[in-house]
Length: 429
Image 1 (cartoon, rainbow, N blue to C red):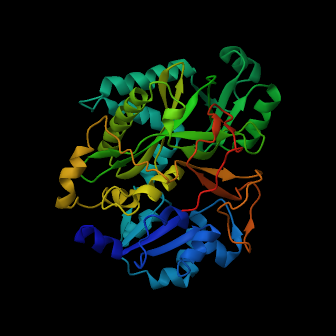
Image 2 (cartoon, rainbow, N blue to C red):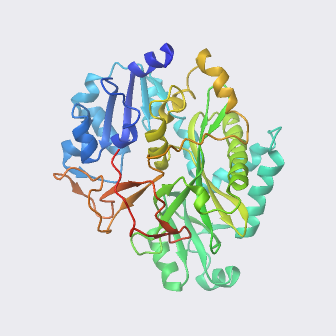
Image 3 (cartoon, rainbow, N blue to C red):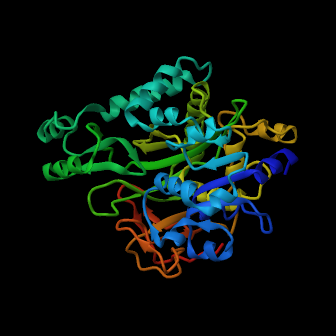
């Protein structure tokens, strides 16, 4: 690893949503400064010197922003590391700009840019407006955005304005309703009946919603990208998203990923290449907008077409898998690539990075005997899951842990994804 990157890592405080994201990255014997909201029992025992807030509090909850605020104001661990020059975060928070104004270098985007892009109603408008500034890939991306909106018959309106029967007639039965700030499937519902529509509107807490046609037999994918400081766009291999109705409320919730796309896609190389070109163009637009670091793009493959669905302006949960493969790589590690969005690229990495900078090239990191995916566990009867410490109370609705796998366990990738655990093998990494 370059001396410049080593010096940055030595002076960085990592504010991690989960310590499990750092397992492959944390070099044994290297004292990286990490404060984590949560961790599996296995990782907590493996790295006993790292502060894990849920162990201190005895409770696992959804929110991370509020917990980090409490840590920064009350934790001795933060006080001990307050002089770190750099702070790394999973995403932008309301307080990250304040830290930046205080003189810290923060490895995340501006919070107000995050808000614009996190809003699912404004992000496509921004992407379409800025696509005109692109020299390459502009036609392909703008056509995809416009054609997808036409295919899905996207509507945006105050959530009490249009009655169910009108939407049912428009979409010919089944459709999708989304909150304006949906995240990880939270606020996204598949609607087949009037009662489901009424229940969804009660659950959505935004005054404006988006409705779209439900595409039967669609396969959801995600691709992780990184925008480096000089505008280079690096992409990982796309992954199949495991989308389930976990809480039996017709909610389309993220439950894991599988990077062995070849098992589910016809002409997979062509499709993954086309997805990568779209992600590259989106990355170029984001760079123009001032975005740096990691981002994710969600797609749906239906009727042999590739449809861009939405942008995620933050770390992706699926980063868990490339971290286990690339965590110790000099520059391909996700945490290092994210940092390279905010610092100069070391000269010794320049040549190799250029090899992966082409619009259709992605890093295919999958290695034998390492996991191709993970699955969040809720009610499944599986032993030896990577679960929280026994002393921790888990809020209702939160997963009880997760499992890693290297044999494909998805019997049907369409929503709601069907999982086959009959030949499931527990993996330990």
